[in-house]
Length: 336
Image (cartoon, rainbow, N blue to C red):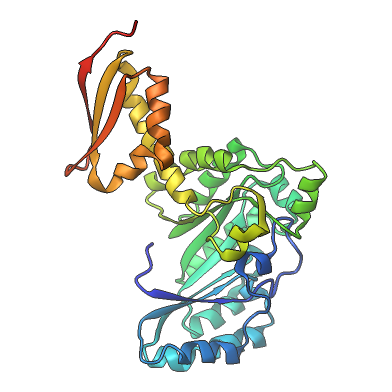
């Protein structure tokens, strides 16, 4: 589900959240110390001038867990700009246990188009250890209600949370697929300063979910969503100056995590193709022009890995106009 609008993000960090999840410090993640008010919403939209077709996105917090009058105040501030065509869509994120008919009716009245639910996991043990305060059943119930009310549904899934394993993440992905969301976001766990998870990590009680862990696991998850025709609209936390400047102290934070995962998938394709290559071969692989960098990998990591694994004399990736990749063994030289 690729947005057809430019997005205007507005942050409500921790607003409506009934407890602190072990991994979460939204002020550190977003760089926004205070949630926006209705007046802040108006000012942000007025600053757009005559520009049109924006999707207004309330990020952070649990929007539908805010008192109803506060939800209404934020959304009412948007209405003149909806009428003028400045805002053509509204999205927000919330908790699965903060969805009911009354709340959804207000969102529908105010023109909300997309509801994102922070599922994070479908494992009860992982949810408990992460102090989420809701169950997997809450995710299922809320997802059905959101879709039945006519909203686009986006589900957020995290990997590497306390108690999580690769297999439980795969199982969570399958259960999320069964809910037929319009899109998903994948967020491998990052250890953020000033969170309970950070303290657990410092005490040696939590082992970080590294970038390599996340790349390997997400390269298993992405094909599951692709096979179900469910787009992954975000992979990894959005890079910010705060995170890159030291707020992300460990875990799966990388400014180009999605690209690393795609490159790992390309490597796996090549491993299958090269399975029969003789040691000492000089191999040329022709790949779609737009994907050459993914096949090569950052700092040529895929080239080095494949050349070493298959004992190749040389490995070259060449662009071509066809979508399907093909391999050509230029010549074979026996290794001594």
